[in-house]
Image (tube, rainbow, N blue to C red; front, side):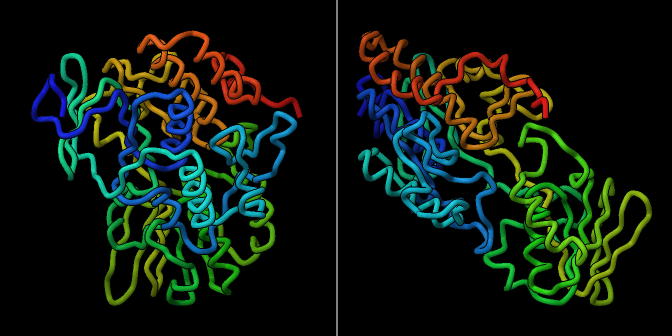
Length: 377
């Protein structure tokens, strides 16, 4: 119990919200620094990955190159590798959750599960976190909650009539012979590929044109892994690019999908909504300022609206650099940890000793000017 506020049940210098790869990754670094922290997770470690469809795989490949200063792209620490641990290049969601559970146990992280953070209050000198199991106090908060548990249901009228990608346990469970897939980025193409492999007639409605859109930044373009797979089934997919779905209706036992260019698609089976995921930051939106839907952060990934509130994970964005993949946002863990350590007056020698490993292994990206370049070929 805090002597500053008697109503607080638990107090830590740092509270991390979320036990996915971002929360586990930053937690390991704080553990190495010997800091007072806890990770609060509303379900279990890696919970979002456990909900992935059975057929879905990581689009970023895992390969053990750690000894050559090229750590596994899906690793959350410089000294671990999902490829080595799981013996696969493109892990499933549950497999990756297993990796997160194993590293959290190995590093003996302080994690409290089945605790939902209901809201966070910014008080003078610290934060009050109201949770499902009491009140937590802290000087710093690191928001590490992800996106998968917050699907975009209402991207178009009648979205509730569709099956969202996040609700699929296995594509083999999807009923019917015809499937209308709405949304054309990674989840849309993944759904279309897996449904086509099952022999279904697939209609893919893409509001952009991701088959033709090429960008050297994987945040804005389909991955090579997806492109390789789509080639195998493209002849079995009716593809509509630059087409926006305006509404889905259910009438006379049929699903009727209408688009902005007055096309109509009719199916006996529920359309699949693959328009993506919302941000978990909506739960603490009052503590951030936003621009074009992304939180405004300073050079330490700290909220520009709330001092000592930091963000790690796929929602981090600086200019055109979107850190939405693990191999990107893990490079900011040390930036956040270093700043918090300095503010707690940790000796410089300790900070440099621990962060040296991260800097040596390219887990420390401070100069963001490199992130706006295009590959030359």
